[in-house]
Image (cartoon, rainbow, N blue to C red; front, side):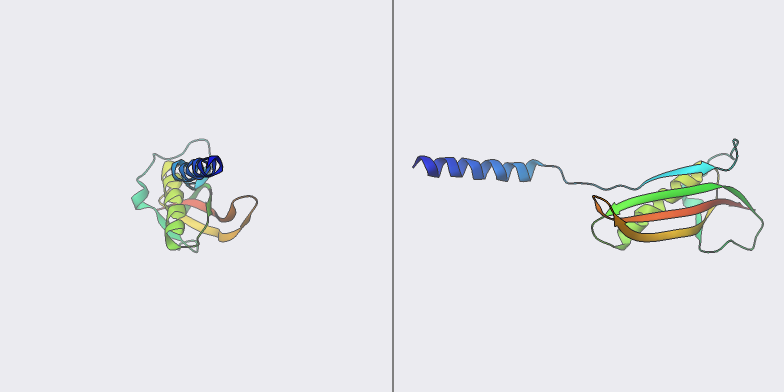
Length: 125
């Protein structure tokens, strides 16, 4: 009887640990490195356009954007989180566009897979 009670209490304790442990949320992390010490006024992230090639219009390079996002499942939602972070960082240095240089999914040490984004923040005039 004592073994049964100890086993039951142990199972309940393990179950409670699984239920009460918060899930791991992997959010995109990044940095914007301005090309100059003075940057234009920040813009809204909704006006940022993502380009695969440099646009034909006159542009001014404002800096580099680098964002990484760990993920378990490669889906469109994860990619959109990365692009939203890119837009926030670009808007913070006054850019209205970002040219993609690298946007790949690869292996990472310790957390599974990771999206890496590197791009150039530009101001299209």
